[in-house]
Image 1 (cartoon, rainbow, N blue to C red):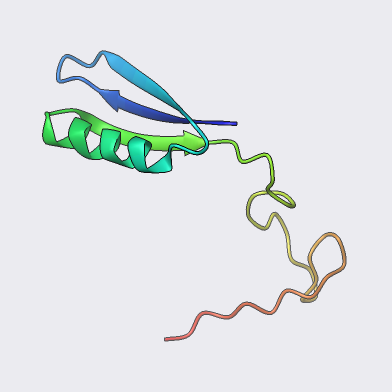
Image 2 (tube, rainbow, N blue to C red):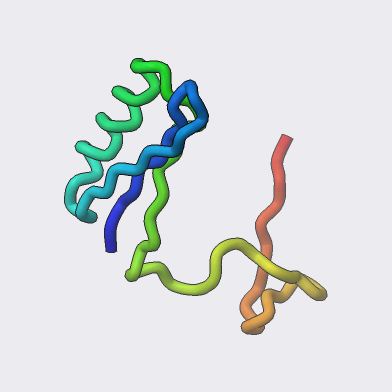
Length: 77
């Protein structure tokens, strides 16, 4: 797994910097440096191999997730 920091130069040219998974601090510093140096749309992305399950919730029916577990999250005001 790696962490990739993407940003756009003022000219619109995309730039990417890749970091190993144990270099999160360096990736965050890279984001900050890019933002401070005029890059736009600076984002950090990774594909975490240890992730369990799918991203997000794709459906909830009768209070259950697709795998049958209860979904009881409620927004509190």
